[in-house]
Image (cartoon, rainbow, N blue to C red):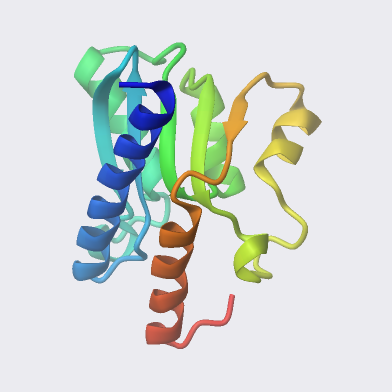
Length: 157
């Protein structure tokens, strides 16, 4: 499988889990942590179902990957996420050793105002951290899922 094919397969897996998150009453976002062509962990947004404001998909996936390997970092791994990571998640990924983030939908492309002019690359540039960012992988599908949920719950941003 090509790198692009693997990226798409991991994002499809994340999309499947985002649907599950929505079915549990959570924001439909999911993330997959992978390394060396193998999936390590999957996380879904669990904020509402788990009563934990930090249980964003990326953090949940990272916690699972770290627990699986009994490590403090998963050096060189990739995080695939259906929605651009918020600043909290972006920093957790850095601290967890993630070398690359592949994202589907972006906040600004969905017209979200909650983060102003925030962009993942800007945070990493500001902090001097070397994290590769790949955008546009199944972006339309990821974005539509988020927009549909926002309409359903009456949320503008």
